[in-house]
Image (cartoon, rainbow, N blue to C red):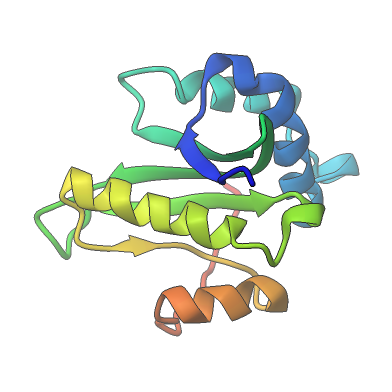
Length: 152
């Protein structure tokens, strides 16, 4: 039986990464008039391979097929000397859900954060995302923050 591999995304992964990215954006209803512009997707993809960008991507692969993705970044904060790690995006293909892919991706981000000397990894999810929250509650502490945002 093949083993799930979590690894850094590679340029040749684009054709398999894109449907996962599109699925993630559809899940958060970034479709129709609220869809991400294609230039945002292209810029995001380029950033993963730009040494001057603090944005990184991991993918979960099984038998040559990508089953999930996660994007994360390191940033400074006013509450610690070392940077923090923000897990920006996490998505698994529907057929792979409940099979450990999301857990493996999160744990891989934890490892990358440790390697970078980050004391904490954090992320956001929508309060209605009950399936994912079941996993998240096993892997991290819900710190109870309410997020506000405004397009300016």
